[in-house]
Structures are given as C-alpha cells and as structure tokens.
Image (tube, rainbow, N blue to C red; front, top):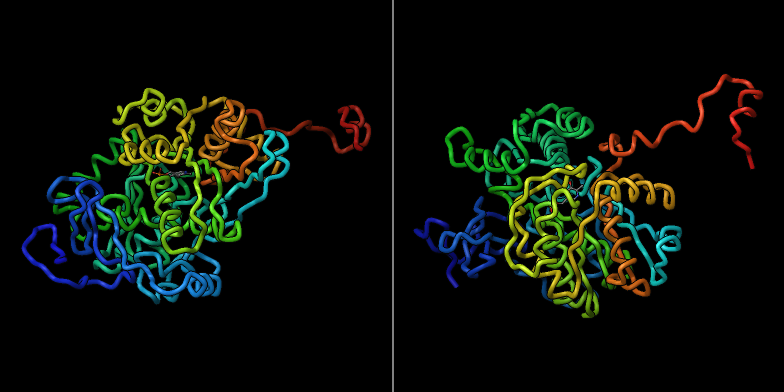
Length: 433
Ligand SMILES: *Cc1c(COP(=O)(O)O)cnc(C)c1O
C-alpha cells in the first residue's frame, strides 16, 4: 500500500528516515497510514497516530537470544522500537532494565500469595519512567532534524528532557505548571536548558504548547509529547518487555499502572500484544488495572459510571505527576481495562501517603506520590476482591520519593533529638533490641 504524507501530496513505498523497524504512522481510529514524520493527528479524522512496524521475522528463540545478548538497558529491545540499529552507540542516557523486586514483605501485609512484584523505575537516570519515552523521542528528533527539544510536563518529563538534551547535545526549553514540587523544578533546571513556569495547570501548559507548535516561534522544535508523541509513547512498551523477560518470558496475570495522560498504560498493553504475536511469551489472559488520585480521577470516574467518554476535571491532588484533568488516552485506557477484565480505581491523598510509607517500610523502596497512588489502588482492589491475591501481580513505582518529599515530610521526622549522652538516650525510651 502506498504511504502518504500528511499533506497528501506525495506517495512512496519506503520511509524517508531510518527509524529501524518503524514502517509508517497509522491512525488509531481510521487506520490511515502516513509517512514517518513529526505528525501526531490523522489528516482525515484527527485521530491520534501511532507507529506501525515491520516486526522481525524468524524464530522466537533467535529473537529471545538476540535480546538477551543486548545491553542492560532499553536498547536490548531495539528490534521492536522506532530507533536506528546503531542507537546504543549514540550519546544518550541509556535508561531502563530497572529492577523487578519480588516484594514478599509487602505481599504478606496485603495478603497476596500468588507473587507480588514492584517494577521500580525510580532507578532510571533522572529517577522516573519518563527517561524511557524521552530516549525514543530523542531518536525521532535527531531523525527529523530538530535542534530544540521541548515538552509540556507535570514535572518528571521536564527533567528527563533536560538531561537527555544535555547528553545528546541539543538545546532544550521545557514548560511546567509554575507551582510544582521543588524537587521537580530543580531537576528540570539543573541540566542547563531553559525552564518556563506557566501560570496555570498542566492542561493550560499543554494547550499553550499546542499553540506554540503552530507558530513560527516553535519552528524547529521537537515537543516530545506533542509533535513527537507517537514515537515518545513507544518507549513505554519497554516496561512490558522488561517485566515479561524478568518474569522468565512470561506475562504477569495482573498489572497495576498509574494514569496521567494514559499513554503508558496503553503502550504497556501494546507491548504485551507484540510479545504474544512474536511468540516470545505464551498467549494467556492478563488484566490491566489503572490507578488515579481521587483529586484527579477523570478516567476512574468514567470507568465506574460505565461511560466511554472521559469528562475533564480540574485537578487537586498531591500526586502532581499524574495531575492531567483531560487525559489524551483516557478512552483507550477504558477500552483496555474493560477488554482485559481489569478496572480503574482511585485513592485519596491520605491513602497515597499511607501507601508511600507502606512501600518504604516493607520493601525499602521510597516511591513518589505516583507510586503511592498505584500501591494505594492495588491495596484497595485486593481488599475489594477485584485483584486476585492468588495470581502474579506487578505494581509499578514510576518515580522517586526524593522528588516529592513534602508528601511525607510532616510525618517522617527524627524519632527523638537528644544530647549526645547515654543518659539522654536512655531517657528517650528507645529500647535497643
Ligand atoms: C508521567 C508519569 C506517569 C504516567 O504518564 P502517562 O501520561 O499516563 O503516560 C506515571 N508516573 C509518573 C511518576 C510520571 O511522571
């Protein structure tokens, strides 16, 4: 089939840029295909575009061996990503292959017997899962000749873009809501690019960036989550690949994923489907659960009401990295949760804080508020009998608690402050045993 550009004025059969197995962009709504380029909406129906592939042929055993012999980062999956074959040799942050922690203490506390795992993405270079998506977007930016890397961000993305641009030798200019946590602001600024605070919430920032793309002011700019969004999204597939490989090339039975725009959740499902298609894992049912904070729960509200459309909300929650009131992938998240027999649920800010401390206390992992949302929802759904405790369950921790200290600082302080004497220590009543 001929491939058209968005303008519809040229046709060719081979992509003009080398992004490895990526063959074209295709519309998720009407299926129309477009040549690889910095496009994000279908010229015919305005549906979102996604990357379509010529996936590797050959035996699953060969592919599995090739992956296992690759580097200890996301580039081991380069044959399944929109990146050139020599991607690992270019200057980039090499994120991924983070720990999958078997969380036995947490499992005991929650009453989960079928195996509970925490996929801990706080171990990425800028301490959140965003390094995965940005690494892929950087390759697209290079391929399309962009010299400035940009984004609208709830915090973590700004830091990931700043760091990746610094390593890749690109300029960066990133946009955030003005009132983010200090840890996120400093992480976004320290890499030396421009950081702009916008007086408004994330949805205002995103709207502003869409305007900037259409203006001469934004010419030559690659916005990782706007005009490079189809490529950016593919980075989240690596979470699906890693989890399955780390489980011994097996799908988890249940997985709990936080939702901001919903991109991550939809692409983890895409990753599982590709592994099944390629014969890398056995085709068996899995359930996908989505997690939101009550103060920003448009997808959860739609799920519970049985709606197909997501009604936008004005966010008010401590889980700022997830505070997107009008999530672009909301309807697709609903589809996936319903198709797989999963659910979308939300928890209060108080439950978020309790869950951050539960994970820290049981497993020695300090997650950010998004991790608290995800574990909080996991706990709620186990208690409600929606998550089956006898099945293998994976919970994502997508960010680092050091960036959201305010969430726990009031209740995480020194047990006692004393004079440096044994008498004072004895008087403090801390019996050593
Ligand atoms: C961005 C982000 C997410 C979710 O992102 P999506 O927009 O749903 O893909 C989850 N956790 C953290 C910590 C994030 O920064």
